[in-house]
Length: 69
Image 1 (tube, rainbow, N blue to C red):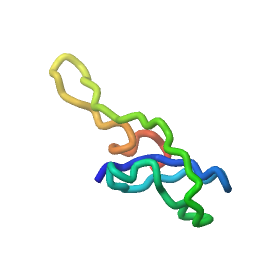
Image 2: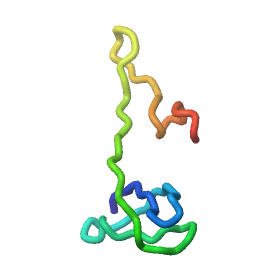
Image 3: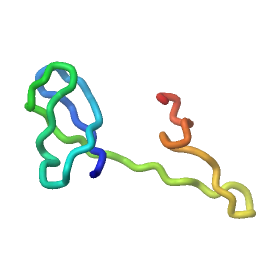
């Protein structure tokens, strides 16, 4: 199942949810419980090449480099 990002239109809480593709536009807010949510446009993390040796640096949210992990 894909991981989608949402914002609750009732309490403005932003959250992520694993939701089947067929129900991607329907998610329940974990904070207030309403289903009046809006799916947000998400960005993805991709490794960057470092130096000339082609090695990848850890980065993006998956590597903890975003500061919010």
